[in-house]
Image (tube, rainbow, N blue to C red; front, side, top):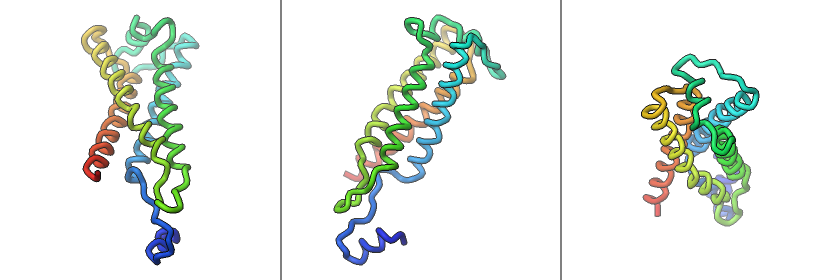
Amino acid sequence: MPPLQQQANNNSGIAPIKTFAPKWATVLMVIFALIGFADATYLTIDHYQNIAPPCFVGSCEVVLTSAYSTIAGIPVSIFGVVYYLLILILLFAYINSSPDATTGRKNEKAYSLAIKITPVGFLASLYFFIIQAFVLHHFCQYCLLSATTSTVLFIIAIYLYLKRKKRS
C-alpha cells in the first residue's frame, strides 16, 4: 500500500488520494488525444506545405482539397490541433495537480472541462464524416483516424459522466 494511503488507514488525519476517474480512463484519454494531436498536426503541416499526404485508404487528396477542408482559408485540421492540445493540457493539469491534504482529491476542474469539450470534437467529426460519405463520396484515412480518436474520447467522457452521476 502506498505510504499516503497507509497513513490514512492508520487514522493519521491524512485522507487517501481520491481520483476523478480510473487511471485506465485517464491513460486512454491521453493516448487518444496524443494520436489526434499528431494526426491533426501532420495534416496542418502538409496543408501549408501544399503536400498531399500519402493515402492508402480512400481519396485523401479529394477530401483535403475540397471546399470543406478550410474555413475562411484556415484548414480545419488547425481546429483539431487546438482541440486535442486543449484536452492534453487539461488532462496534464489534472495529472500534475496535488491532492488536497484534507479531502485527498485532486483538482477535478481541469479533468471535468476536458470531458465537457469532447462533444465538440465528436460532433465536428460526425459532421465531416457525413460530408465525406454523402457529399464528397470519398474518404480520407487521416480524417477517419481523427474521427475515431474524437469518438473514443467522447465515449470515455460519457462513461465517466455516467459513473460519476451514479455515485452522486
